[in-house]
Image 1 (cartoon, rainbow, N blue to C red):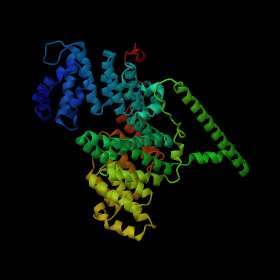
Image 2 (cartoon, rainbow, N blue to C red; image 1 turned 135 degrees about the vertical axis):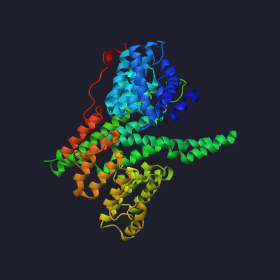
Image 3 (cartoon, rainbow, N blue to C red; image 1 turned 90 degrees about the vertical axis):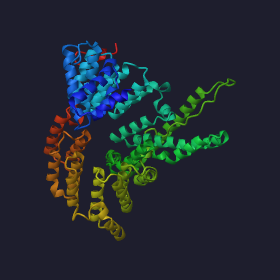
Image 4 (cartoon, helix red, strand yellow; image 1 turned 90 degrees about the horizontal axis):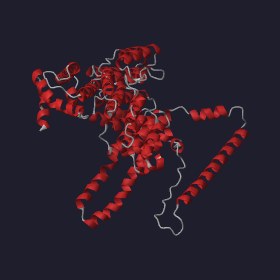
Length: 563
């Protein structure tokens, strides 16, 4: 059994025993060329573990021996040429897991130069670039893999997902359209309830501040779940008639927890976040309209608005007539048998502009939040978002309830700490806070941690002392220090500049750079440049820190790979 050979690697602490067991287990898979081998060995790369160091040393020894003699260390049997390629793939995945992107790219490039027709190598290279923070290069190399097998739906899906994460929405639409009927991307994906695409597409539009299209995609996911709920009614009578009671009970239980599914939770959180950004964004459209209307009298503006509305009505009428003609053309001829063509009404709001132009966005968001709190109360992101939304609506008791739930889920999470400090700071500096609400908040200060400390500054310092080596916690401390003590902004900047980036994730580094950037709460040009230089040394390929140079395989023309 393979499990009997694999399990000792998790417990071995003697270097000689670990090496012999590792060789016996891994070398046969390397000879066979198993692409998923590293997924099995990844637990051995846990940070600070003995096996992580031994893993790297063994791979380095293998490469030296295979390059020099063509054999594994201690063996006289000559290996086939493909063995060194798969060892390089394993080494690239190991370095990628350890956060050493440059070494990973060096090994994967050597593997591609060795066998440029191996499709899996381009998947691994795209993954390395994704982890390194260069999403555009990741999308480009994933697309290279897709082009090597145009009939592979999985590769098409992966390429589309990578393009969306790089915010290349138009390219992603044309890519996934290759596997949709007649190239009609939007209608076909909506009919097929392709929720992963709609979630990724909505998140991409949200990042580029296209709030209408973001809401459109997120609400498509909501529509699918509403369809699921309606479809259950057909199942009730079927189960009773066929006496499939076990399946019936399973369906009823599924309906009870369906809105707690991760797809719905992600879509609802996206809708709420989009509505909150709509409230906070500058009204660029209205400002542009006012600038365009300068020098016009009220009567001229009214006349221009009337012309615009007439033009829109005329265009809509022409579109309806054309849609009816297209429907008649697709209908079966008179007397000819065939299934009736299902009429599809044209989408009157393809860009989601009407969805984004609501009078009370926060009230719309509150409707979705009530559903999330009912069906997914155990998720920290839901409680944190509930707290932020409640504070934006000045619903202090709802925010307090969400805070208590978040404390019960993960009290030391940086997101929880941010919410606690913002809530206490907002309630203490709000002169219009009702006395009854202030009394309730005062009674809950002990649970929120303020009763054990004389001020918010001391509460913030105590949080930092509990998580001194956690880069995300230090980031939250610096951000909250700037909020409660603006005069201590220099100290907060220094905390960010002193971060140990060796243990900091790319997401933490990006957030720190945003705080020091032009629109950040700790905006400082010199500090931002210093931090970006330091972060670039840690993540040289991350585009946000100036990386992302063009990359080609040494000794191999990427344009000829598919020949």
